[in-house]
Length: 240
Ligand SMILES: C[S@@+](CC[C@H](N)C(=O)[O-])C[C@H]1O[C@@H](n2cnc3c(N)ncnc32)[C@H](O)[C@@H]1O
Image 1 (tube, rainbow, N blue to C red):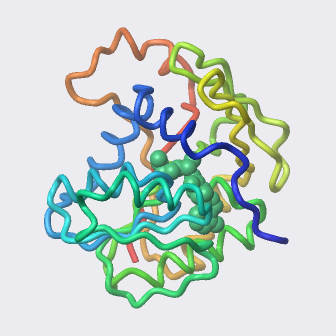
Image 2 (cartoon, rainbow, N blue to C red):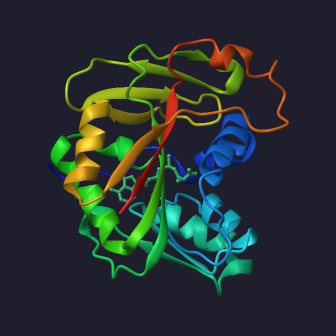
Image 3 (cartoon, helix red, strand yellow):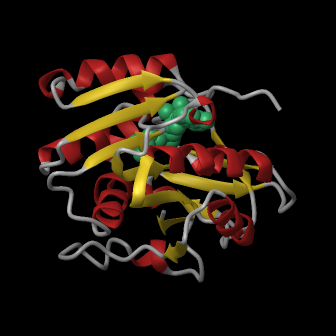
């Protein structure tokens, strides 16, 4: 299957990740709680505009390599990261086409795996990520939650999520209007297929990490978000 570029606008996406609390609070807290960033060599795969890459450097990581398949995202990331250009480098590529040198401590995959349309492609993504990591290196995933089979209206939090089925690669629509003009389209693969893909790529340990409320954040704001069995997004942690 041909690899596809995302269909939404880079600047519009940058507005979502820098303004919605589901991104600025929930996402960043639930990613960064899994490691101490100080001194780490990190690969940020599907880095988008580089918002996580810059935070990693701000929090003391030694260096970050951001990889993204979309030229507009990479262009924007380079522009927004000028002040950290000594510590962050960006590469435009599909992760499936990359081979790393096993020199990184940590890989961040924020909304990357949910673009895999087949189990085969999910495995290819995990295998390529593994090639960047030292033995014992860690992956932190933030992703569409495959345990959530209903979706829902999260307008209070800036988006709506609609599933179209539960077959391999069934599209999942995330509607961030009015900020993003086009739907963000992810694809369904089962929870078991996610675990299998990491195991097939040589990871020794893989676990799901459901989102928790950021420390000190206002629980009343998040009440409707958490009022369901499975949240729309989830984290995973894997160790090579
Ligand atoms: C929703 S954005 C998330 C950006 C960033 N990780 C964040 O959390 O703000 C997903 C990004 O993954 C990139 N992407 C999708 N498939 C990819 C692939 N196979 N290899 C590299 N990047 C990919 C897209 O171009 C897009 O910029």
